Length: 307
Image 1: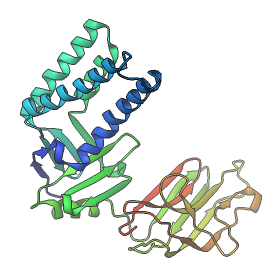
Image 2: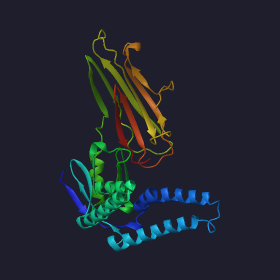
Image 3: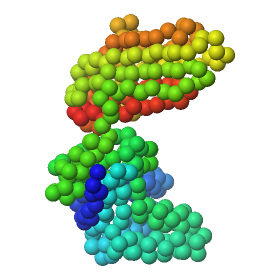
Image 4: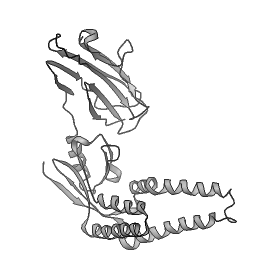
């Protein structure tokens, strides 16, 4: 594919995605701190030292606001590269230089005062001037066409907001959808243990999934090899749908069985099952996950378009 690269300026205090990040990174910790201060004061703020602590917190927020306005012009200046390797988010040169100066000051100040948390914050901030995520790392994608923004998630701490222009949003979204589209058969064959092989395949789920829909899939699990092998491997497969957590729902057969295992206890019996699951009351970006386990887990992530 042809490399796509662009740079853009985002108003920090008018962008809901940036404000959401600030709320999580700054608002929640300081919110907890404010609650603790009020609790320790017994609710009597004005007649205790709590008023000074709260005043300093408020002053810190005001100073931070004016620093962002004066130094950065109230704008975030990212750049993006989309190519065959994945997606890269970098800070534009001018803003990167300013970040380096501020982060260096924070590191030196923290070391001088013995405040290692401040130094650590400076080091972490500087290390995130360039963020990369490969196509195979992507686990979830959310599209916001009205905001010309795409949120890409990889591992737990690897989240990337891609701010597009009005002109290139559709092109960028099309590339991402193409790159994370799985083979139509959703068929995976996992390697060998000694002379044993295991294979699992899943039929193609519906392209559009809505809350309350009955989702049918077919699962095929089989093994091959010499049953006299001194190895006793096993393989299992199952399907789930929903949010990544307690909200998962299982794909089950007519006997309400959700997980199927081929092993020496059942003489490596094959399975060919028609399974059903009810789509939960989820939202766009929730996951339909088909799993095949054999000494390790292979997770086949299928980005759902209408959940």
